[in-house]
Image (cartoon, rainbow, N blue to C red; front, top):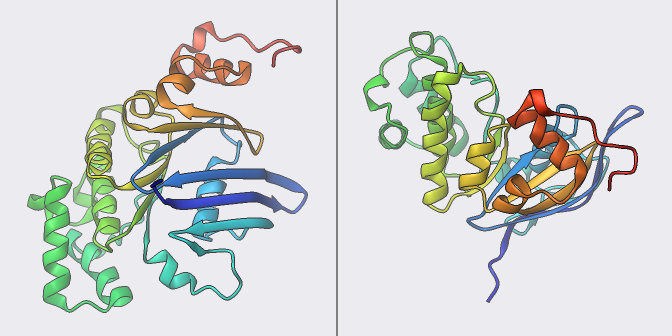
Length: 258
């Protein structure tokens, strides 16, 4: 029996005024699958991710999460969002409260959990990301990588079925990236359904079940990570990866490139 799809995107378009950012996206993410979305800046990657939980409202098309149509006008979007964890480029932690309170406040306000229950869930998830010893610290006392791991723990504390990552390491110093990627590898190994917008090609190659390359609002190429990252078929994908992996060697594709 085929694995059900946790995310289905059908004919998705998104425009901001006259600027068409997404131009007909069709994409499925199976339960337990990790899909990395790569591509140049401005290709629509982050907008695609934000349309999945309706942080951006599509111009037209459909998005389904766990079989529920997110884009249905009658949908309870708050109920759907409780099933989706999202981690942004910026950490968006509350600076005036402790790490533990950053994890417990959303649980209590959104899920209605009792204080003690929320605290136990917070502690468990801080342990998962290796930050149990920072429970009483304030965000300003943490490195950027630690803050991002707290942000991941906060999302996990809500019990999501799907995790969306929007370039979660792009704001970090290079030496801090590894710890965040290690947490994401752990989640992938645990079977978490994940969509990840990233420029970390080694992560995409090692962890993703599939890689999707986007350019100018369209999916240009998608397939197994080893194929798309290691042996891309499309000239535009090859050019992008050359620039990412070896900027000095990059040459623009010719006008007759496929």
